[in-house]
Length: 258
Image (cartoon, rainbow, N blue to C red):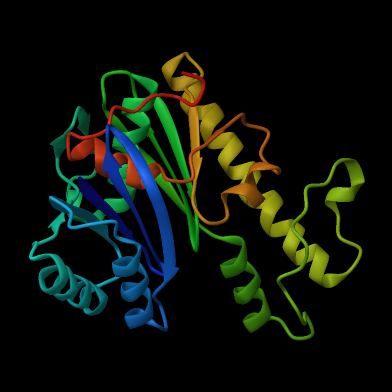
């Protein structure tokens, strides 16, 4: 049994790979309460894992505490996945792969394996990222966009009188895409801007490839964003964990309809 762990900027997510499938996925916020998040992970463990395979973008402090917990509780040393020039069928577009977030790399590998070829991956969190890969596994590059909460916070800091910038982000049609209050105008502007940029990027990739690649959507804000997108997406809430399981050689990824 393999424990796969995605250590993000705010949350830690985990699951076990057993019988070539993910089981018992869980998550906890670690940003302000790292000890409680690690305890949640430890309590969720059904037993001693054979391996612990992880990806990290949180930084050294939390990773050190995580590594120590894994050693103390299970006698294991975590295996951290990092971005490479080439690995698992995918070739990174970055001249310096270390500059590409390892969570993006893992998700891209998962998308390529799911599609059995060209794919786009959208990860909607604090930042919203899009990466694309062609049928031969060549990473075409990516986008990093500010998430809706970041956009709203930036406007709140730079503009007086906006008030609560979170607003409602429900999908809208016709003139309803326009807000009738400042809060709504900020919230809907953020969602519409993100969705428009992502739709255009996917369309550009499709034109370059002369085919419409499947688009996989993941991340904490994925469900809110999906209803604004015109692009058809397959929602994969555990895409990074699935990628880790694939990299560990313990998971055979398939689309949801298979």
